[in-house]
Amino acid sequence: MMDTLKIIVSTGGTGGHIFPALAVADEIKRKYPNAEVLFAGSLYGKEKELCRKHGLDFYGLNVRGIKGRGLKAISALFAMSKAILESCRFLKKYKPHAVIGFGGYACFAMLLAAKLRGVPTMIHEQNAVAGLANAILAKLVDTVCLSLPDTQKQFNPEKCVLTGNPIRHEIANVKKENKDYTELLVMGGSLGAVAINSLAVQLLGTLRDNNIHIIHQCGEKDYARVAEAYKSHGYSQAEIDTMLFPFIDNMAEAYAKADFALCRAGATSIAELAATKTPALFIPFPYAANDHQTANAQSIVSRSGAIMVKESDIKQYPMDKIILSILQSKAELSEMAENIGKSAQKNAAENVVVELDNLLQKKRQS
Ligand SMILES: CC(=O)N[C@H]1[C@@H](OP(=O)(O)OP(=O)(O)OC[C@H]2O[C@@H](n3ccc(=O)[nH]c3=O)[C@H](O)[C@@H]2O)O[C@H](CO)[C@@H](O)[C@@H]1O
Image: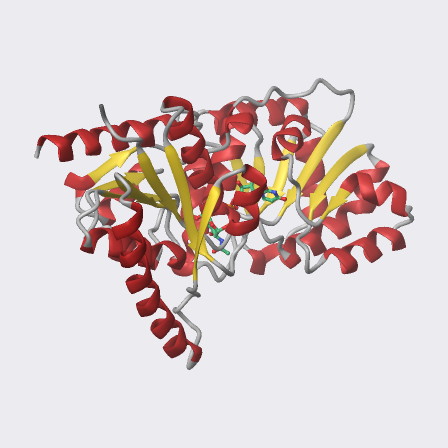
């Protein structure tokens, strides 16, 4: 009889890495109800809290980002070396059948340790341009799962499989609500975005005058400022509580209501917008490594499922008129919704787990 299947999924930092990992953890448990899935991440990101909410066991590593942190990078590098040793010791005890990484510094130590200990390894890249951790790990791991076909050019194509970007089951199954008004979803990625919040606040008068509802995720740090701005537009705290959120736990409900989104161009947000047929205006995060958010949005924009404006150009354009004209045209909204829907890859979590099966089978035969 085979031992209990034990898989480690590893990543961290922000939602765009963590939610695809959680979606794959769910799919492993759905397919193998007796499997043990452990989430390994940094002690300092959002992953610990999200795992707790998700009911997944969590193994915390004392690691922080290295790139762009000046002198602090030296202590971060030291912590990373310690985390690699600690991961090696942990793997020796835990004996997983495979480790799957979803990018970000938080998974680097665990994946490298798995490689050193001869544990089968896979990574998943969400973005059109790979991040630093995945770019290095791709050279070492057995399988590289990709969300977008062009990313293959950055890796050894023989290791690459196009799986799509895994999204939460409830989001993949969203049914749009029928309403007699239009609703705008504003979101700035998992942490919120000040520039998007400021633009949304400028639109408040126009939206209210045209009976357009808003559901707005603004991030923890900007909540007080944005709530004040809502108040100065005449909204009561009770109204604000139904419209403005530091973080939205139930994104499936938000997508079910949304006719259009004003947002960053994080890869996982884009995968969810496509799966829920929610067209968008993307304002990519201008400091994203290698401008990967612009690259993430490009194929959807070229298919007319979304429009894109650079953050530095916001002031040059009559943003209220541009957004209002789309929100007021049912025909344009529905054409854009169909177009963005063509990029949906709703089976991405299943595809990643099929690759996991293939890898385990290959290792059993070798
Ligand atoms: C600044 C930066 O480098 N951001 C990166 C980070 O973005 P970030 O972590 O912001 O990720 P994404 O925008 O891709 O995804 C956000 C995720 O958080 C969820 N969510 C968001 C808001 C909320 O209130 N509730 C909620 O559940 C969304 O549903 C989605 O699942 O990882 C992405 C995926 O690697 C990258 O493409 C982004 O470029």
